[in-house]
Each structure stands twice: as C-alpha cells, then as structure tokens.
Length: 638
Image (cartoon, rainbow, N blue to C red):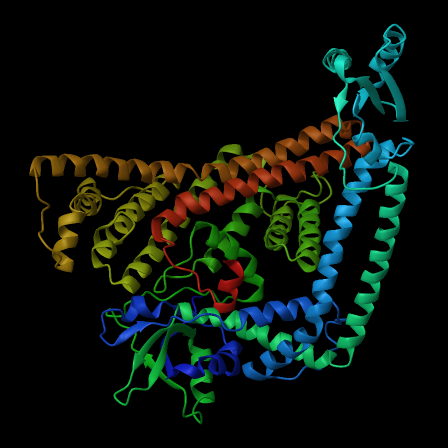
C-alpha cells in the first residue's frame, strides 16, 4: 500500500538549523521540497544562501584520518558541537601541517629522481663525464637507440665509414642504446646516415656531474634517504596523533555529519520576524507515523516549531510515494517501479501483480520437480544475495509446483504422479479456451481496479465513460457472459437486449470526451473545431476500442500455449532420452530439464510481464507518482 504522508513546515532561528538536523531530523526519513518553490509567492522570503563553513575542516580531518587506526564498530565517539569539532581538527592539523608539507615535497622529489634514473639507466655503461662531453669543440655526439635488426647492419656499414664512432651502452631483445661521435664538418651527413638506420635520438638532462653511472648511484642514494625520511615522518605523525586519537575521530565524524547536513540549506528558505530576527523554513513530507513522533519529540523545544499543512487541492506540491508492503511482497515492488510508482491517491498494484504474475507463471510452467527447483534456487539467492528477482522466482515456483500436481508432471515424467485436474496435451483446444476465459476474468478485474482508481482521483468522466470504466465494464462483461453461455450450450439473451446493453455503453465510450466535460463541468462540452472531424475521430477510436477488447482477450491464449509448449518440450526430452524403451538416458533427462527450466522459465517470465503491463496495467494504472527520497539518500544519489 501507499504510505500516508504529512506535509510539515519546520521553522526556527536561522543559526539553529544544524542542531535541529542533527538532534531531530536525522532520526526520521523526510522528503524535503524546495521551500522557495513552494513559498516563493510569499513576500519577506528569500533563499538560504551560506558558504559551507565545515567543508575545509572536514577535508583536513580526512587527511588526518589517514594516519589513525580506524576500527569500525569498536569506537566510542563523543557528540561534539560544530565549534568544538572545528577547534580540535584545526589544532591537530596545525601540528601536522609542517609534517604533511614535507612529506608532499618528498613525494614530488622522489618522482623526479625516479624519472631521472629511468632516463639515464640505459647509458650507465658510458664511461665519460657528461659535462666534459658537452664542452667538446670539434666533436659532436648523439645519444639514442636503434632497433636490434638495424644495429647489425649498421655495424657492417660503420666499418666502411671513417668519420664516426658508435659506443654501445645497453641492449635488450629489441633495441641497442648507445652514443655516436662525429666531427662537426661531417655531422649533417652522418646524422642522415644514422637516421636511415632508424636511430632514435634521446635527449639527456644536463644537470648532473660525473659519469651517468655516478649520477645514477647518487640519485639512488638520495632516493633511499628520502624514503627513509618519509617513513620516519609517517611514524612521527602517527605518534603525534595517537594521544588524541578518539578526540580527533569524534571531531571528524561530527564534522562529517554537519558537512553532509549543510546542503539542507539549498532546500530551505529564510524569513525575518518583526523584531528583526531571522528564521529558516523547511518544507517536506514525512510518513504519518514519523510526523507524529517528530512533533511529539519537539514539544519541549521552544526553538523548533512545526506546522502541519492540510492535504487539499491547494497544496503547492504533490505528495511523494512510499510503498509499504509485507516482506513477502517486497520483491514485486520491482515490477511496479519499472512501470512507474503509483500516484499518492492511486492504488498500489503490488498485491495484484504478486498474485496474477505468479499464478500465470505457474499455469504456463506447471511441473512439481522444476517448480521445487525454482523455489529452492530463488529462495537461496534472495536470502543471501538479496536479489528481488530471485524472490519473485521463488514465489512463482510455488505456483509451478501446485500446477505440477494439477497437471501430474514431475521433471517431465507424467507416469509418476496422477493429474489432479487435467493434462494440457490431452485436450489442446480446451486448454486454449480456458486460457482465454481466464484472460477475460483478469481484464474484468482490471476494469474494476480502474473504477476504484477513478473514484480515488475524482475523475468521474474516466469512471463512467472510459473503455475501462463503468461503460466498458458493462459492455465487455455482457459480451463475455454471452460468450460463456454460447460455449456451455445455453441460449443467448434476446437480440434487442444484446443491442441495448452493448450499444448504449459503446455510445457512451464514443462520446466520452464531451460527456466527461459535462459531468466534471470542465469548459465546453464539445471541443472547438470541426464537429464532423470530431465524430470521425471518435468513431475511429471506438473501432480501436472494440478491436482492443478482442485482441487483448485473445492475447491470453499464450497462457495456455506455453502450458502446452512446456509439456511438448519435456515430451521431446523424454523421447530423446529413450523413455519409451523403459531405460532412459539419465544424462539427457538431467540436461534436458536444466535447459527447459532455464530457457522456458526466462521466456515465460517475460511473457507474463508483458501481459501484466500491456493487457492489465494499461487499463487501470498510470504510474505517475514521484518517489519518496529521504534527504540523506538524495544526497548519496546525486
């Protein structure tokens, strides 16, 4: 069912909003509306604009938390005021800030050292001082690498060239790293030659003394010293904060709550009293039970005032929808949410879906063994993984088991159990006709639900003249009754009686728009424009209505068809397993049951959901409600 809601105006001194959120509102689920949108037409009201004063201290608290051992569930934390929590975090962070800055410098320096070592690592075997090489006046040099396959060709070619020298420094399976020297006057010619052998230049940083090996070892030593200093600083940081560990944790968690609750200001408004004092205004929905508990709790608090707004048509915002159903029906809320939550004054179809979905699934998938398998598997997945679809499968499996007894089917074997009702394949036409009759009853039930929803919504035109209202119920119900009389061999009512009982409702459906305007006293009875075109369009719509009555009813033939399909598929499995010879192949029996359970179970589940949405929901349910989103969950979703 849909929870009954209360619309509350909560107000108090502007500076007291954080205390109220932490002391009272955190305990309850409340769906806040934007107060400015709801009260914007009232003078002396403005948005609650304020910078989050807790954000910086909360961020510093998060940094400090990295150096504390946090054991969830074992901490005994204190409740602190915002000012006390901020003072604790600021004092602790001031002591740790210098340490943190030095650690940051070490991280940056170590990264530069690692980059430098990576650049010169391939030239560590070069036994020349790099700075002296840079001072050459008549010789140029180039550092780089060359693919191994081209290096062997280069070696043969260099023997014939007297103007260059290549020194190999390092090699792997793909490349050779090294340096070549060339006189200035032949530099352009030799550079072009090396380039033709795919030589890739590497530019070495010049800010180091000595050979590359000496520079590498010097950088490595500095890196080790920095890492040791980093570890020492971490230990000092931990020791320094350990003494005030619980105090800092309490301050951090308090600031976290205040910081998260600070966003309530985005939804609040402000006003000023005659004496100049400023007040906040919060505007939101609570369930009836929570609203009563909240009002009772704040009775002794003179700083908080709560006013309940009457639920009438003048309310500026529609109530949100929160579903409340027994635990066994909770999984089926998923199907309702997929279609759309019910509006606040609309009937919750969860119970209807739970009964009709599982019932149709059982009719289409009747087998004792496979049904018990679905019950066990679905229950375990729902119990340990909390999968709502698994809960639906478990309940649908109960109906599959029951209809398995009615059909006399156990894992496809039809000789083990007697059929308590009928075997679908023994009377195919009878099975299909029963499915159509069952569909007709469900359509009539959907029309009754539509009438109830129309009464709740005070839509009297829809109640009386719609194709699923009273007019549709009389017309479709009488035709269904005549069909039942004909199928059972009874005589039909007089033709004139059939014409009157069917014709008058169809005329009402044809004129539902002007008649609806008349009964609801909304504007003109006939719409503006061509009256001829209006009646032409109405006739086309009436033809579509009559056609939809037939097609929607016949659509339920799939309920019987899948019952036949299931029996037929298991018959094929038993034939392949050689059941007729008396010694079935049990491997084929097991694999066939698994395949049929998985494949047909999936198809049946989809087909039943289609019948729910298109043949029934479309007749009585709009699903135009907005979800009830408590403030804390709203922030976590954004």
